[in-house]
Image (tube, rainbow, N blue to C red):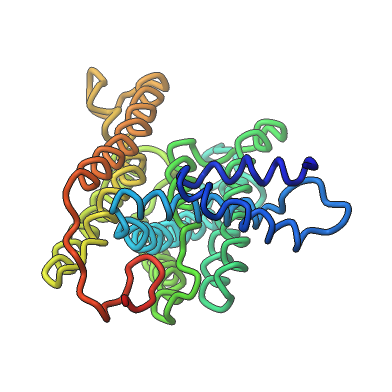
Length: 328
């Protein structure tokens, strides 16, 4: 056994034990046949494919096959939200404070964040016109720029958006990577349309002097409001889909609790302060950790509860919620 085969076998642990015993050798053999002669590590696409396949099989083993369509629906809502926020922040970056105010800025822009928001807007366009694998690369680029922005801004001693603006954008982007492989045209256009509407609305508000900086009401009111709207839309979709016996909306709502929670962190942290509008970095950090633990824990409990319920047999001819094929 060479190093490459050993590493593929480690990745195969994502699958249930019974499945590994039955088909593990076949799966690893296929990847080895496709590998180059000097390859020592699994390709990133192969590793991601193995992990996704293992998760899919584990969900099938527990009877929670409707979770994956729920993740895809949540990914769409996350991308629409992330693109709208990029439209708002990217437009606001074009309107720095007057020079006489003495507020630091980066050239004609508010901060270095303009580069990051441009990447998110580009990702929305790529999603609309390119296949999903290319769109995921564009989302990944925007994510990397978002994560790299704080250390780069510190090194250049330049202003940047606050962490409580960057953190929910990262969470929304990570969820957006679960975009369906072959989305419909309406799904592909949704993020770009939301970004366009956000740009137009922000420009209108700028003309009314109704748009401030990243701080103040932006953190304490705007971000929690966006998080609340995200949950409201998710709840409405869940109820509408449930009327037709479709449970993916419920799973999407549970998954969206985490990004909505990060959007609400400033408002939640503000409740700990002695007076309204005052909260410390420690309070925000503690609140963020609580959200990071509570959201996934809720999803885990929901999956555990659903797996304990006996699954009702599906009539033949219906579409499989996991692979999209017809049931035998």
